[in-house]
Length: 476
Image (cartoon, rainbow, N blue to C red; front, side):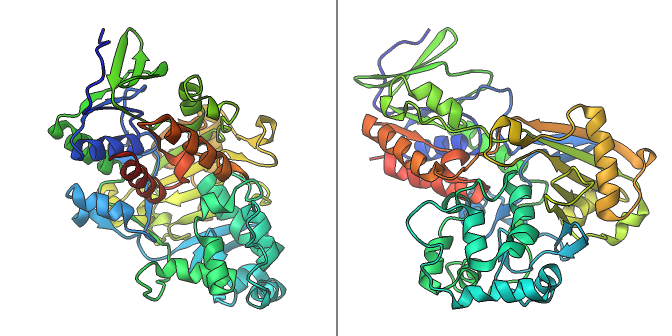
């Protein structure tokens, strides 16, 4: 049992997801002796892997946003810059009640940069495109006030109901597993409202975000990239880098309490007590508040809600009819679409060239289930099928309908189900203000930072960028 006083150069990180591992790397680079505690037996959190039909696949995040260079820079530092790859051309689709339509080739969260782009016009219809075009004539102040605004409130005010229901709701449901009426726009699309005030309209703000800092013309297609071999290779490289640096990495170690001491922090995990001058908590939101509230009373009563339970069904399929990639890289499903339980389908071999080569004549298709609607209460969460058998049956039905290719059980070479229970950060309206209050209280306590998707926003780019900012602020 280690109960010695904290050394001035010691640091402790609780949580071994990407934010925790990156925090450990930043602390080590600053000269700290670092220990990382991870409750589970695996590193990476939502950036995981599994093997299906002998193919090593991502079991969680499989791409990152390219509107910032946060993830690309980290990959380069770890020697993975040559492995950064764009998705295959073809784009994604949205499944509407009347059938499939192409998603906007230049958009953010499904919000189009130009309502008159051909694929947008086909989804919205003439009157929907006309209503969306009114955005550029509205005062920039509409939807840009300092009051909290949901994604749905902003889109409805600026571009109307059709853009919301036919484009934004499917994208937000697929990415965030929630109704856009529940989500804080400033958390899930940081800078969008500020851009609207600056550019004069929502469409112009979307276009500006697509251009990025360099100001180059926005490229058509999905503003994402991946890594050859899968995003989980980023975690493998991070863990190897930390091990080489001498960082102490402990799995199966659950932090049970955290106390402020005169010399720093004392964290108890089982029968062992760890002392450190600096503490970084990189768990999910509810766990972070539970751990710190007894010592940081300013965060009491501010525990965020958990996200919906999400199930990912991965199918490895032998069916030559999928060779033509009938729905490009995949399909997002509008919530009002009858007869489809999945919120999204990714044709992974249709999306990533490296995976197509690895799979040979087989196809990898991944469907996701679970979404929060209404007020986010458990009774409003549409978790869908639960057992593995139910999920397989639902996935076969939904994949056949969405791809318009009959997929039978005999076509499935192998399959797997991965469950993420409340893992997605749930950025409900008001969450940003709550996060700011929590961080202020933690900062006032001293030598403490909280990081992760629940405070940074969903997506690897947001998490990596925010983690580095928080560590810079924490370190002298």
